[in-house]
Image 1 (tube, rainbow, N blue to C red):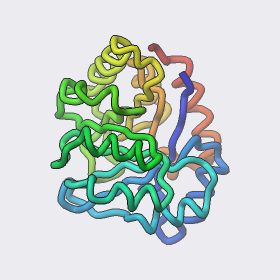
Image 2: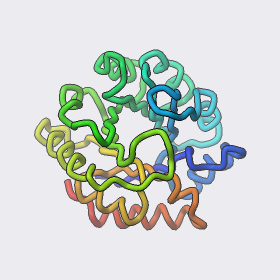
Image 3: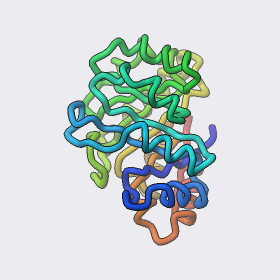
Length: 224
């Protein structure tokens, strides 16, 4: 499977977001990741559709949008129209998750399901065939800069195994939270192939070099 590295705009300089989005593209990021927080589902407020629109104007790479919203179903069209290519919603959100995932696809986006560290992967099995990607959070969502939670590693392997059992061998499995050149290969060894990284990339002196190193180490460790 293709190893992909997604710089997370949450860790960028918010005073120059368009430039920071372009920096991710120029450094070789496969897509730009945007975290949308409502202050209810998670204890923080971040961005909205206007930031997605800005990023769509600034870069040509895909926009991976993670909706940390209590009712993501109310905003799907807004974010797709703003330029999101992928939309990920949480299994823990308070909506009809299956219907929301189908709506994302009908709107022309790639649907994805996200699970928090404390959530059992068993909960996403009924919707696994509805999605193109699964995001396993490796920190508790809401804030950047948290330490990687290694207890999530078995969950990643379990999701990959379930996907294989359903003949979903092209399913992208993302990880987000504390991802760097040391933790990315640990996740890749469990079956993750897409790596969202904020602090380690935007804080690097050479983002391009850091992306290349992370991609190389993850590719070497990847195991389906």
